[in-house]
Structures are given as structure tokens and as C-alpha cells.
Picture 1: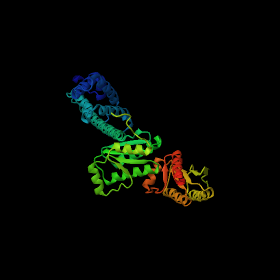
Picture 2 (picture 1 turned 180 degrees about the vertical axis):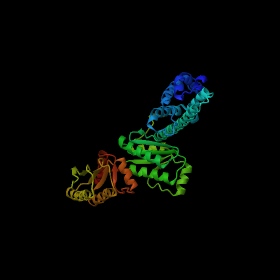
Picture 3 (picture 1 turned 180 degrees about the horizontal axis):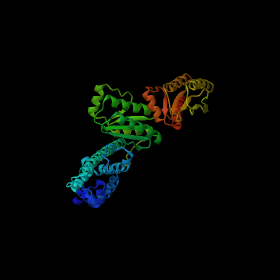
Picture 4 (picture 1 turned 90 degrees about the horizontal axis):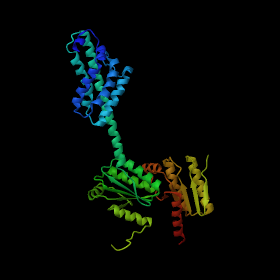
Length: 283
Length: 122
């Protein structure tokens, strides 16, 4: 192999004639790096595609990877990096997959002393560096998207509006309340009131550990908005520390009904709905 | 200018707002309503705003004004069918419509007026 490389032959020709052994070595190098977290056949499939997309680019030093001729390899690398993010690989492992090709090619050509060949190789090395950076960018982008998706899902998950009786809705709030979340809760609750035609809603804040003036303000707004629509809100499950904070901050709950527990609030709502709950027999 | 129709059902006047309200039509509605209550001796007014999607402070104040006018004729006012977005807007504008009764829909609004009417007879 090295004997061939010694002759005045372009890197492109070399990569074309030596494609199979090169890809094999590349896969070996990366498989060792990843310590079996991805099968050889998967790697080989991906790398074959990269290799095919890289061949026409040999001789380009990768100074302008946003050009149209890089379209193919860019989309391939983008897909590859995204898959890597989901599979839990680190960004350096992702970028090293490309950089490994450098070593494989250097190994093949180390005995060559042709200056022409050396220049080509330097350009190719620059190209791979640029592409490696590209994978890093795709990786960061994909990770940002995942984080955004997850925070949206979290917002949805943590604000359920449940119907606990005909005409009575409950919103169990858990965790920290901020403006964005309270806004979501407010909208969901008001919409649920219209949808289910419920006249009572219980906002249970047993799972809320901190209340400041802003959060209290949002809660009050929700209650007033519900009242404007013809429904009554009951706030339940205020923790002792929170009660102290509310009084210390001088927040007025006015004529809003507050109850110690969700059970008390439900009993109150049922009474207002005209429902009596009785034991059918002595237990 | 479009005028909002006022319908009479028994002793109740029903105002169903189906058009985009402008300041002029709001003023016209207040005049029409005052005349109608005076003419019919209605004991209740229901304003159905389930079709209203956009409000401003002028429209917000309209509800309170109509309620005050009706009260002079000894009639109760109920605003029904307010949409969540409208309710949020009114709260953000700082209008809490003190003194105006509200109900989720027309049916519940009629029921409230019925209960108030019974209290009146007793």
C-alpha cells in the first residue's frame, strides 16, 4: 500500500483505489473508541456514505463548508450527529469519528515524501477539521432542541386539570410556580371550565413550597378571571410556612374561599353544588 | 351602523352580541336597552358574549354601565358565556366588573335570574 502511495499519485486516486481497506480501518478505529456501544455494521453503513460523499471533496480545504458542494455531506453529518445525541454519545466521540479518518489516511501515506501529496493531505486534514466542527454544531443544536421539547413536555405534564365531580374541577399544583407556568395553568383551567361547564374549581397548592407576591398575584388573577366567567375558585392546601409568608407580605385574598385541605375544598364545592354526601351504612 | 338586537323572553331581556363592537354601537346598545327595560318592565337582563373574542376597556366598562342602568329599573344583569381569553384580558386591564353577575352559559344565567326573581316575590 505504502509503496503505491509513494508514487506521484493524487490523494483522490489513492482513496478511490484503497476505499475498502480504508473504510475497514476507519470502522476499526472508531469501534475501538466507542467500546462496542455501536455495532460495526452500523458504523460501516454510516461511514460508507460519508466516504462516498467525501471523495468528490478531496482537494478542498474546507474553508467554506457552507457552499453548495457540501450539501450532501452536511446533511449526512447532521443526521449522524442528531442520532448520536439521542443515543447518548458525547460531542467529542461524535467529532472523533471523523478525525479518526485522518489518522487512518496518515498511516497509509506516512512513507510518502512527495510535497504535492503532502499539500493535498494538509488540505484534506483541514476539510475534516471543518466537518468535525460541523458535527459539533449539529450536536449542540440537536441537544438544544431536546431540552426545549422536554421543558415544554414538563410544562404540560405538571399542570393537569382534572374533573373530580360533576361541575367540580381540580388543579393540583406541584413544584415552583413562575409566571410562564401560572399563565399556562390559568389558560388551561379557564378553558376546562368552559369545556366541562363546571362552576367550581379547586386550586390545590399542597405541592408548592414557595409563594412570592408575583405568584400570589397570578393566583388571584386566575380566580378573578374564573369569576368573570361565572365560576368560583377555591384555593386549598396552603402550607403553614406559606400562610406565614402570605400574611407577612400583606397579600390580601379578599373574599376568595381558602380551605386547609383538598377534602375540605371538595366538601365546600359539593355543598355549593347542592350535593350531600352521606354514608350508606355504619362501617 | 349595526345595532345589537334585544330579545324579550318572559320577564327577561336577552342581548346576544354577535358583531364586533365599536364604541358607537356600544352607546346605541345602552340607549336601546334602557328604553326597552323601561317599556317592558323586565326584571332581568342577560348579555351573552360567547361570540365576543376581543374586548377593550370601553367594552369592559359597558357591562358595569348596563348593570347600573338596569339596577335603576330594578332589573338584575347577568353576563354569560365569557371566553377565557376575554376574562384574562379584562383582569389584565384591571376590570373586575364589581356588581355584575356572571354565569358560564345562557342556561345557568336564566337559572340565576329565576332564583333572584323568586327572592323578589317573597
